[in-house]
Image (tube, rainbow, N blue to C red):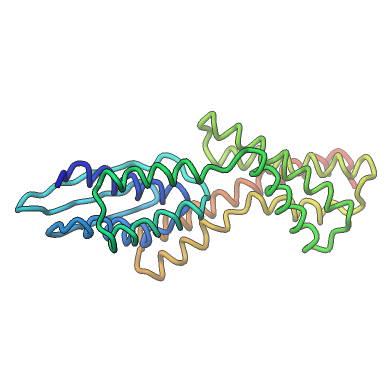
Length: 253
């Protein structure tokens, strides 16, 4: 058995899960299951939001690898498929080459197109607007604001801009777009449109994962994710609040 190939495959799987929003305890469980499928003597895995470290003991020798996590997003389908792959590997014990091909197939099949991402971003903001008692006009405006906000954030992410500043810009964009809709008489209630549209920027998954990690005893990851959720949420509030403050100072409402 090629230990180096096993380390690379298992660390790539763990890295993909962390980048896709997987909980750290689930990543550790998945990577451990993969390594145990190849009858290693002992495996230790430590995952955090910024790195995954794997150490394998085999035939009296210790091998290890560290993978940095430089970007994080949300792709729960990817998390589910890699977790399912680890269970399939544990049951069927295929060769490492077959495992690598299956992981590549998952990566190819799990990419969401830009048009699909933008559409569902609009759907999410518009439905939240209805939840906050918005009308049909607010619903339509929130849809287009959601699409625009997601398009801007996607392009900003490609420039490797920090998430904190991306959310400030997008929060400001939500406020400006909502004010424009109000100014032209398309909507009557600014608060419902902003409340629904800003939900696209709320770090709900990061907050949920932080609580789950804390309950699982992952103190470092749990506190890290909680801090990340707080600052990302704060940045969205800063962006939106700054624009609204300027609007009010200029005689808005």
